[in-house]
Length: 285
Image (cartoon, rainbow, N blue to C red):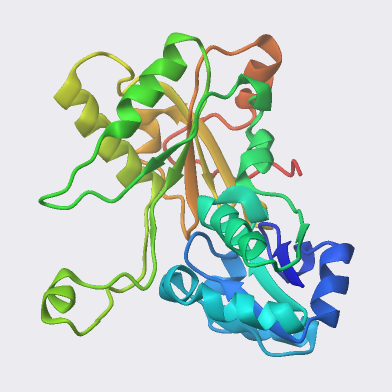
């Protein structure tokens, strides 16, 4: 049996009882570590904290393992219980859907244990979930690669008054271009896009297209470390959020569409009051 288990967003305590029961009976545990990361997993003791709770070792499943060597995991799941641990909810990334399809194609039984993800926890900012349009991803720009397919989606959302959740790039164990050319893999240092970088790139793309999908005065909400004890939520214009230090990863951004009165009331709790004020989650959980 292959168990795909959501771990939630904050730390090791966010796993559900059903998920923990499944982990305890599995012979082997794999931890997906490239589409997202637990905030505590960014520290040196993050994995050992999980292993201490579960009482068994965890194998890190990086992008290369999941996309190129997944058949080995599925082969193990044919004759024993194997857990694939995923930050957030198992279906928060298309890679995990592909894993289920491949398992079922090979006749491997699959059981999914759901958990909270950014897709529903984002409601903490006060914008109603049913008022969101298509979610977009903002990738890191390079000198030669500056994709902007997200622009049209944001524009379409805003044209019909919907909010847009922007998921910001995470680059973990990405091979360098030079190493790919030489045929020997060397990896870039891990990088996590900040809200500030995302806004800079968004404004660059707006300047390029010039279709007024948004501008520096567009209302947004920046969220850092969503679901953690030290989560940070700040509402303001793009111009204002550019000046905010959101601290450690992970970050995400919401571009606000048309708001209802209750949404406006909630956003007031998170709005910037002064240039020097600190912004926390105001104790709302």
